[in-house]
Length: 465
DNA sequence: CCTGGAGTTGTCCTA
DNA sequence: TTAGGACAACTCCAG
Image 1: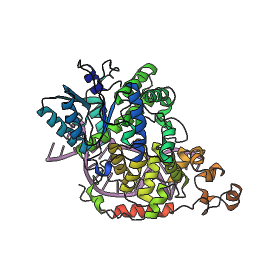
Image 2: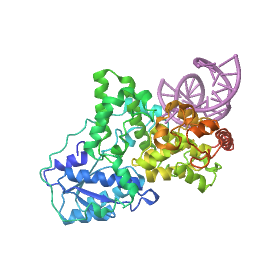
Image 3: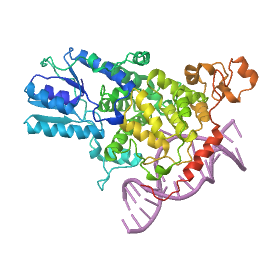
Image 4: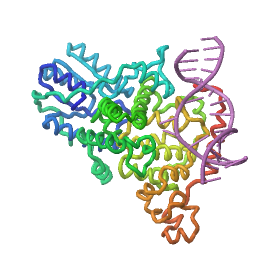
């Protein structure tokens, strides 16, 4: 409710406000919201509705049908919303706008979810950035206007009452799966919870962020991504709260890295806006001939956390159990799928889309392209993560792996990331039977690394776009 | 137009 | 044990 520019403007218009949520995935195609998103959205709407005195109205269906009809039937003098950036939503909202304007209804849209809107961060020749660092340094920090100061929670004394639409339950967002209940229990959802998390992060995690953000075994990341995605907190609120700490404690070093991460989100949105096909098409077209393998079983092993590589399995199980995965581990698991298993990044993208509570088209697409190496400013191809090295470096005591892969929990630190290297008697005393109760590694890491290097070599280096 | 420097996130081998 | 270089060659971007 706070820093929500559309709501703020509606409340300032001097008329009763009719708060509306429409679940509309009609044009989303394969990017209709995933299961984990549904779970979060349900909780989030529930919290918001509570804050609004249970006066929200819910609809399911095509917004471009519902909004004009509703606006006419209640004789609305204005319609307000915060802009979305998914290609089909841009198209839909443009149609709604045109339709409403025809009927003389006032329409105003706002930036409610980005620090910098994609059309505002461009190179001096007017074209969009493809590389993060200049986007960040020159585009965001130097040339773009400063992120606006967050708006206060509006006075909503006069809410319009109408018996329209359906109940929240009527949206059908909570399937009666045990899984969705489990996910819901992991999180506190809603604006208040988001603010609490931000404050908690700024007080504890932020001062160790530079190094701490890479440690899945510790609690140094903000975990704000789902709150940001669903608009429970705005990046402006996060940005200004962090800047305040920077000024107060003179600690630009650690927080600088956090602000950078916020701008990575902006960069993803910019890429999606200017290259709307990135959810499916390689930005570097030469990757269209990449020799991906087809292997359903291998994909299932990856999805279910049964690869035999503890850090990969821990990540995939964390995802399944909590709807979230630590960022460092996202990179490791993604790299493993794409490089070691040579499975198409679309498979990983689809799985993350369905299981992450922070599933976000811009971030998901841009990040998978980056990992796969087909993105705009992709890493050099020879950067292939070794999951064992990564595990030892970023989960040095194996606490993370032990939490999610109890099969290896009793191994000494030295072997917890590579149980297949442990001598038989150590395996035995740790109660592990490799190949039965915990799998042997599904690929040889060294071999599969060489195979990935060879695969990229086949692309040659000539045509890039 | 040309030019030079730089580019999220690494790994492996060698001295 | 640790530090440094190789791993290629490309595109992007600012001046």
